[in-house]
Image 1 (tube, rainbow, N blue to C red):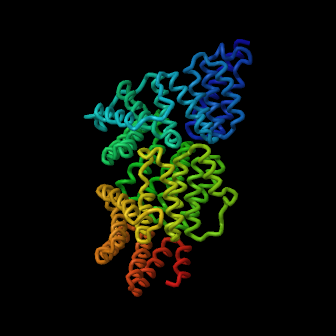
Image 2: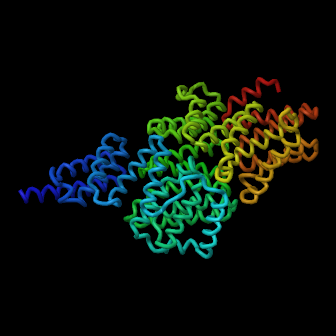
Image 3: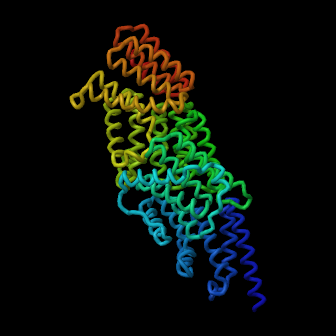
Length: 560
């Protein structure tokens, strides 16, 4: 019997090794098969007592394989086994981590964040449950910035590794919930980022330290408005995780690379690198995340790719095909918070293309909006309204554009400092303001509308210093509209002309079309019918090239 028992344990170990290797290769179905065989070789009685470490590893790995293979019923049964038999809190952490992931996947964001904050408290890293004041945030960021003075990229790459198990788990958990903190508790982002940097400075770095650096970069831009520092820290984050990933045995770092690429390109590098290259990088990040089993990150990458494809003027029929396929996958994986934003982007594409096909007719945007509001997903609400602003302005539904801008700002008001300055939102809000400045409503005077438009100008005059390619044509168009609203005809016409050249030079075909349309409206107001007709004709060519056939039809039927 002892010999048979020893052989059973050896078989269990062999299946554990095979299961872990299958997980590393992202073959989770095979992994689960091996791990179930491994568990079957454990003694039925006192298996945990006599082979504790082996049992724990088998059940932890099986739990992860179940989650990744969407076998949630089996996963919960395995979790019960782990929590019932674990000897200490630290031995429950892998199980807790998978539980948090499954809660996030099912849309239970608040519950998952509460669970993580509970675990962090048990690990000695507590955070305030209530909202954080701007003064507290500023103090934390400035203090951390001072403490990091003199640290270079090379210093971090060569820094000691984090060996304290409890601190490592704290960093790992904080790094994992950043995207969901962004949705529900955005004012906590700087505190978590600064805490990770503090732990990494005192105890050493791990792959998840890079996620803390990336979100610290985000905070530099959105709280301190320091784009140069944000880009620097974004590059440090990627350099660190790629350095760790180059180590043969560090699979976690390899899995984290696409996740951080998606974050850095979407939130940080887009301010300085051509938007067209950003969309390519996001699609690549999405595909790499799928390959390593990072489904949640892959879905974020898909959503950001779709958004960037729209705002950089990629051919819409191609965007429609790609984003519809991505939306179907997202719905299959039940990623509702991400899916809601992605669907808003896709609806914009379908409207512009004039497509009659919508595979998501059963999910109305108003329904998704109500769900996002009731769930407290304010960033999702803001994104949906920003999309409405964008599409309404293109279709000349200016009252709807105004309403969408106001609603987006309403749901940004509680976190003004934290939502990444949405350049698309600022741009179309500014254009909407100048439109109403020329035909003021009873609600706001011309002066008030001009102030809103001039506020957009201030942003773009700052941003253009960091990327002439991305922001010059938008700034010039806003300036043209500003001069038009002030009755300065010569200055306005000059700005429209160079805005057109800039949009053409920097390959923003959709904004070249829009600039032609607005320039045509300017000439119509001033009685120059021939110039107006010429610019509308040019707008039609641009929209056709973009694939916005609904806008082409609108021009054709408007009699211009």
